Amino acid sequence: MSSPVSSWIGNLLVAALLLWVPVRAQRIVDVQLAALGTADLCGDRQVVVTISLSTPLYASDSLLLFEFAVGYDPAKLQFIAPLFTGTIAEGADYSGSGAIDSATVRVYAFNVTRPLRGTGPLCGLLFRYRGDCPDTATVRLVLPPEKNAEAKLEFGQLGTALVEAVEHPSSSLKAQFPYDTAFVAIGVERELSLEFNVPAARVRTWSFLLRGSRGLRLNRVALVANDSLTLVVESSDSLELHAQIVSPSPLQARKVTLTCSAQLSRSELAQLEVVPELPRCACVVSVQGDTVSIVPAETLSVIEQAASGFKYARVDSQWKLWNLPEQAIELVVWDSLGRFASRVPITGQTVAIQADRWNPILIRLRDGSVIRTILR
Image (cartoon, rainbow, N blue to C red; front, side):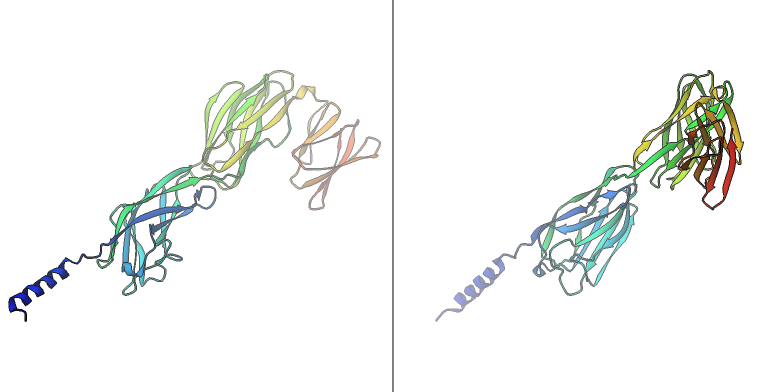
């Protein structure tokens, strides 16, 4: 029979053993951030950043609540919305987000009684890239993540995500003279038109070079329309002029028309060339220039003549017609004896036909009407 003392000591040892049983250690999981895809500056600028754990989340982890404070560069990224569909937090009792400041957003979710569990992202964040040029931006956790006190896990390393913005350009910027040939009298200044076809991209600024051959003097260049565009001449001499067109905001698809003043100094064929430069950060993949031939007026058999609004002139053995109506679709030509000569579709601003001593012509318009005259 044991004594009261030995029984007391035995009970004390049992209590001590119970107190010495080690408490199960909480497991440590890292928090990982990842950017899904890239932001296309020429198309979809949105990108998703996910927040995940380094291991699956189990019901035994007893995680009922999480809250992450996510920091980003507001000059490069715009926070759009939290994403829970398809994540572990989908169907949580409560979920949402809120701005802490202009560069930090908190995203959270919690259940009242059901622990969160599963594999995959805990949640996601939708951003829009705001920059103009290809670049990168970092998304990170700026505060220790929050969780419910009963959770049997600890957050370890906090990862970051790198959002990349890229360009996939597909548009072209084209410069074009509205005619192939211009007729200029020796020593007489003439205004020549030049058009830029700007694509529906993100063009705000582009530069171009006007280059004349010897015998052609470039005097000045100006925008035709009086709108928000600004033309800046960066350098010029008698043969070359380098200029830049600037818009305060990205342009929609449109034509920008300029006039350039040129003067022919000698009786020789000359050329004027426009060479546009590839705009930077504008989703433009290529540029296209153009050339116009400058013909001295004194070499023409017939000087420029007007007929029903268009002009024509004889150059060697050809008639050249330009400034044709926009509705013009076909040119029908007879020779000086009244015999049918040719039928020419009108596809450009300038049309050339074989010349006789004189040629009756008919210009057929899209609306069914016609223009008749005689080239002589």
